[in-house]
Length: 344
Image (tube, rainbow, N blue to C red; front, side, top):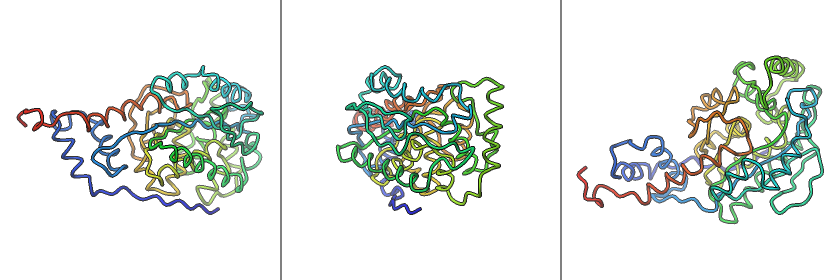
């Protein structure tokens, strides 16, 4: 299944100059900790000593999953559409946080199992009315998978053309922690038990049942030879769209903010296809969902926040965004030793 992204690894040409600029601020060396590494990354992504964040936006991709029919979630599948309506009415956590931090929030119907009313903040990109039950067959066809990836890329291009250079991704989809867990297992070779978590809040017995169902799905699966094969077999339409969105954002040299476990599983697929995508990604938080920390460790990346979040929706992106603003602002506005007349 052909993909044609051109992602340039970060140039190190400005790295020493950026580091000198950071080190000459009125503070002990390294005193701002990970914020300094973040400022360095933002400068390298934009290839400038003065990075800036313009028209930051957040796309929340929503879709349903056929595997939900097998009972892997504590909530019924109808909650996906109900939560999308909550997003559109402005009542969800992500609405609150996006308003607080002035993030442009758009909801993408990637494959909700319902007809949604038109709304200025809703993008209709429906691939289908939910994926198929991967306990029985592949979640999506190769053609559907490719279409979803290309659609995600197209939506990011539209945001970039409006002037956005920093974009975050979130999701909503009952059953999607099952898809993410299987993608993680297949693409990292980590034990399935290390990848499967409680999702929407399963109790111990329900969690055991979830592991049994996913183990059975693995046993019935044909050999998967590529990341795209795994994505089509296990993924959701929202996950596939995020793969395309992440790849296009990196191709456009945008700052890419990754949310929790589901978004990280999409990033994992993107990484397996184009490893250099990682250079442009900022990981907003490590979630409470089992598997997420192990996945971040596998990628050898560090998250900005650790607050035991397990909501999705891009909530971690919105909460972490002020840290990006602080990294940009200290680089721009904080005085150097010379400017402040302070002995170095």
